[in-house]
Amino acid sequence: MSVRKQIYSLYTLIAACGLLAGYLVAVPRDEVSPIYLIYPPEVPADLTFGESLFPDQQPGLVSSSNMAMITERNDKAPTAHMVRYWCPRSSNSWGEIIYEWKWDVSWQPELAIMKPNLHVFSELDPFARGEFYIATESTRDQWLLMLAMGENKSDTRLDREIDVTRWVRNSRYLRVKYRLKAQKMMYHPTPNDPIGFAGAHALRQHIDRPIQPPYAMYLSLWRHRPPEPSLNQSASER
Image (cartoon, rainbow, N blue to C red; front, side, top):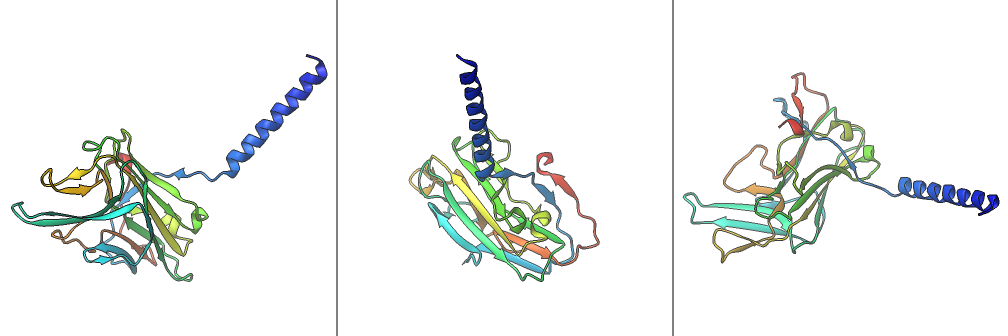
């Protein structure tokens, strides 16, 4: 190969690498962020948004795709109970549900605590997967992957309060997205009672377990940070 051809090949390789690098930078990719648990302060929040499945009151629901709301009953238990949640509508296909909460532009919280609600039962369905995302103006409206479950990951549920202040403080909204996938049809309490592809589900809520606030998922905002110290810890330290 002549020197001229070698130089030409080198420039072609450099140009191709540059185009590839530019493509990787330009293509939006989900970032992964650590989750920090927090104990809510005793001071009541100034503003709270909540979604409830008992009754079905979901004012923040924006869209759902390939998702089914399941009502699970067990009248044969010592104490009859009812559970409701969202799960994929079909096997081995991702389902998605999105919520959004908005507040006035002049209202800038100094503390924001959210309680998500995601469950993955890998011991019952090894192929079950669950992902939890948020998006705000601080993330430039890009989805931020907060947690992925399943696929041999140690986390199996996320249903405790987390600190989302850093993403909410300079925003006027919070969007939440759950992505779920499962393979097996679940049955309860007998093999003749199918309940859905519930190996991965979101917003699990019991009608006979009153909680405060009474939501399957919620966001609480404080205009001023309460004086009581709050304890943060990484989700990996649970």
